[in-house]
Structure formats: C-alpha cells, structure tokens
Image (cartoon, rainbow, N blue to C red; front, top):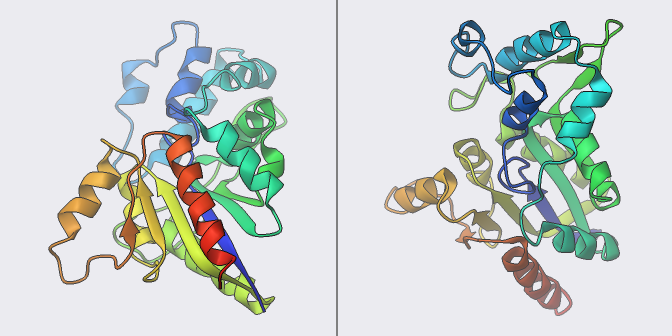
Length: 247
C-alpha cells in the first residue's frame, strides 16, 4: 500500500486570480453581455447559462482560437506557478487534482499557457469542446443527489469517488489538502478526515463559511489554514512532506 499527499484545487479565484467564465466575456465585441442573456441565469444552473453565453459568442463570429488567446491571458494567483512546479518535481509523493465548476477546455488552455499541465494528474470539471459549427459547447459534469450543490456538480461526490477509486488500486493518502475559495468548496471539505487540511483563501466566502461552522456540532474536523498566496500553500505543503517522511 502506497501513502501519498493529495492536493485538491479549485480553479477560479484559487489557481487563477479571476473567474474564467467572466474572463471570457472580454471576447465579445462590447466586452459585455446583453441584458436578456444576463437575466436568463437561474440559481444553481450556471453551467446551462454558460452554454447560452458560448452560443452567443459563437453567433458573434468569434472563433475558438480567439477565445483561447483571451483565456490564456488570465493571471495565475501569486505563487501558484511555483507551487505547481514543486508538486511536479515531487510527483512520486504528491498527487494533484483540480475539481472545478469551470470547464475542461478553459482549464486545459490555461494550464497549457502556464506550462503547468504536467503538475496536474486529473481535471474534474464540466466537459467542454468545440462543435462542428465552431461554437464552444459545455455540459454538466454529473448528476447527484446533494441538495447543497449546483445541479451539475457536487464536489464532495467527486472527491469521495476519486479517493475510493484510488484505494481500489492501492493508493491511499496520509493527508488531503483542499485549497479553494468559494461556497461550493465547503461541501467537499465536510468529507475530509481529521488530520486533513482545509485551506480557504483569505477574505473569500469559504473562509467565512468555515469560521461560521466552528460552533456547529457537525463542523468539519479538519485543520483550517487560510492562505493569501501560493507561497503560503507551498510552505504548508513542505511541512506536510517533512512530516510524511517521519511516518
């Protein structure tokens, strides 16, 4: 049985310092969306809304290559490139996955632009591709029964299923470190074990949710270590690796 560290990252406002679904709007002629489109969003159905956004972008004769160029200008959060490089150079001890409500096409393009695809083992996100008309299409990641999460993705189910599959092939994790920022990152953190680490971005909704939950009887039993930059996470990961050597 092999024991490793598992790094789990959200993407928007975590690995990158913006929201990729908002960044793509820079592709449009006015760098904005018409009111009828913005008003079509329904709570919990963001991915369906983005499907309409991508259709609108295609109807403006904006080709996927132009979208890709814009998406690859999104900035990484400070220190994240260095963190991912450290993970890549320690792949024998660290697994790294992304669990994001963005989409596979954007994440692939952005990781490629940063030269960071080599650091990430698997991306779990909404499947996206370019259709025969040259339009980007996106679908929901999976169906689930979690009432707390958007209809297209429960990150807790993604993480739990992944760990189970890894255990089936003999890979177990002495520490899971979950790095995120948003409210949809709270659900997977509730599935972590004592000794695992939740790392919410300082000043964002996940940090507030974790702080609020401390007084509740079913609060997550994990260490909570807020972060400002990838450097903060890297320093903690180095400590985890040093402790693992003593196991």
